[in-house]
Image 1 (cartoon, rainbow, N blue to C red):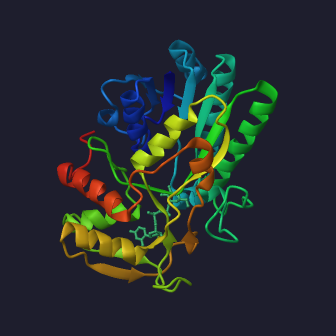
Image 2: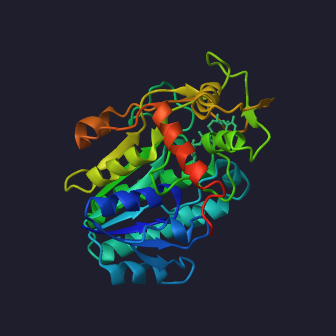
Length: 323
Ligand code: UFG
């Protein structure tokens, strides 16, 4: 298929682009490089430098690449920032996404694949979390993604735009070639590995008084290549709707740090800090739906494999991408 990938220079988009190409698809990456990196774009892909703020730019880019499918990764994704700059999140994650959906309709695109998030649920009533839980986001980031999920339902009904939306849990790990390099790094695993590399003096543990066995937050870490595989399966005709992507296993912040320490053989000093605003104590996916309906089979479900691939990438690229 011809696939138009927005955000293909970002962390998740770069690995999905690579896996799409490996599977024989033809890819156009559309990215404004505000968060992404030019050198994270697989050389086999066609690259278009995006200017989404210019009228008609998105529509023209879609029109000129005539894709069968669109995968929409491009978005702002910092929960904390969204609490101070909500407009930034609604304009890009909702407003620009609508322009893309309109372009998809205008060009007769067969499938729209959307990167959503477990942040659309807010703090869950129960874990593991199934797709039918109520969605009550507690930050503009989650709200902006939920608004676009809802828009997609109407576009499906009115314009017959077939879509699949994946609600990611905690993406982590790396492929051989592409890994995680955010300009501002806030995520746990890279921060712990930077400490192992000696780039940071210690890891801060945000909150040790949560109602969890060791008092730290529990998350469901999912390997980036497994995420990518789900997207490829989602391209098949008739695969539609909302799917959680996680492993169904929760690991606490302390367990992640211990795993990193064990696998890297490095001492990782920690400093205990107060809770970070907006962190739910426990987020764990029930991904049965993706397994049953898409035939998704995660290849790297173990936290050790996830951390090992991330570590290999950071050791090879201690400064991340050059650009
Ligand atoms: N944490 C630390 N120290 C750090 C970094 C994180 O203790 O240096 C803790 C956090 O407080 C949290 C856990 O580690 O309890 C995981 O934090 P991350 O920032 O790695 O991931 P989040 O669960 O906060 O965020 C993930 C995605 C986001 C998405 C969010 C939705 O990475 O992009 O889920 O809830 F928006």
